[in-house]
Length: 236
Ligand code: SF4
Image (cartoon, rainbow, N blue to C red; front, side):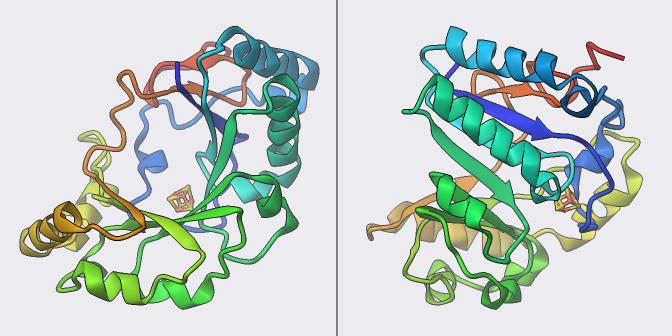
């Protein structure tokens, strides 16, 4: 396993993104919060997973809500990973644009940006900063050159993510995605631009971000390891 996603405890998200894939899981994110209820078990299991997987290169701190809502948990994850394996790169995926000291302790801060005009709100402050543009229709008719103009110099990585629909029961999210995804024409032009880009930034287009097969495993707040985001709780 090269990459592990570590999930902060589930709570109502301070944002309410209409495309949020976390709202679409059949298990409704009902995992026992052993981070709060049995921290020793949670900590020991996370340390064990890190120790037993010596091919692990990346830990990604994420959540079924904004992970910065659990700053103490983010700090604990960083401490455990650094303690067990200091060479592992730690990243956070966040919508939280305000500067925070914790960002300086991470290797990568990946800022999710679902609307074209939001970048002026962000002060990228990690050692390495990534902009993750979520391709809503606000990106229609923009080319890569336009997006590079609104990307500050201290952002060295860009990911473009195509919106991912949930299961058939996720009507609200799927309806939003059906009517607010980037147009096919704009996506095709962006893909062309990315394929021919030869500048210094690392730029990728992620068209299937929920496919975890052979990509990563997930360590949930119950202290257990999961193979994918839909897997049912092992603790409830
Ligand atoms: S910040 Fe993330 S978890 Fe929260 S609503 Fe938006 S996409 Fe969902």
